[in-house]
Amino acid sequence: MEIKGLMLDPASNVPIVILRDETSDVFLPIWIGVFEANAIALRIEGVEPPRPMTHDLLLSTLQSLGAAIERIVISDLRDSTFFAIIHLDRAGTKMTLDSRPSDAIALALRAEAPIFVLRTVLEKANAVDLDQGATEEEKIRKMLEELGPEDLGKYTM
Image (tube, rainbow, N blue to C red; front, side, top):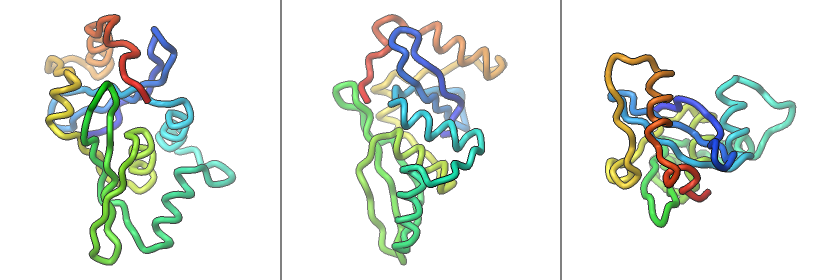
């Protein structure tokens, strides 16, 4: 998956990160916290803060301990809450960390690690598969137009 953009939910003013499957036109919106949205936005925009932010500090700590982030996986959706797993490799030893998707995405951006979403999560979330041929902006607009009021703001952070 790739990060297609960040926006605010018009109904609740809660930030949404929009993931897009790189091989298809499947989009997955995930409602996230303000601080995590800021951490993601800073990295997308290439802004280097004068002091390490929380996600920079965590990545630095992992690297100092000899661990590398291999990938992150949005692994579940239960009771309107997304779950993620951070996959680490430390000298050949594989480890996983439970995480909120927003924190995992912020770390993946900093580590330049790939982002995956399990197909079962896409199915549970009713990820939107959009028409071929439209521009990215038209696809995102269409996705948001197709979301009903019951969809907006339904996911918890």
